[in-house]
Length: 79
Image 1 (cartoon, helix red, strand yellow):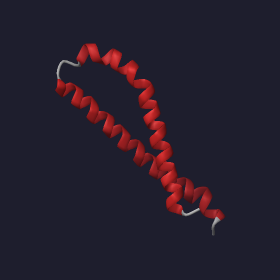
Image 2 (cartoon, one colour):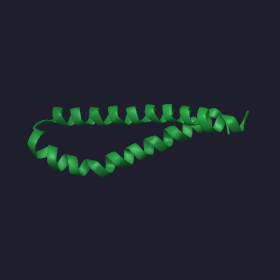
Image 3 (cartoon, one colour):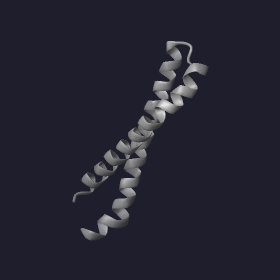
Image 4 (spheres, one colour):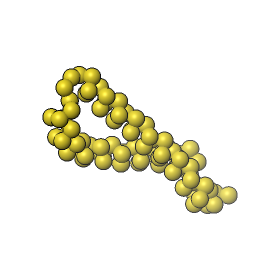
């Protein structure tokens, strides 16, 4: 397995897990946050931007984790 394939797989897995967690927690968060704090479209835009930042962070964490896992375990197999 090539290193970039392993890293890409880790990025995809972590992004999928992050999306699933956000998808599961969003209804609970919005039921609490929505009625209290959302008063305009700007507030919805802010929530959307936070969501995008979280997804980008999860993707970066997946890349770092994939790189670490490859160096730790997989690289020994192909040397």
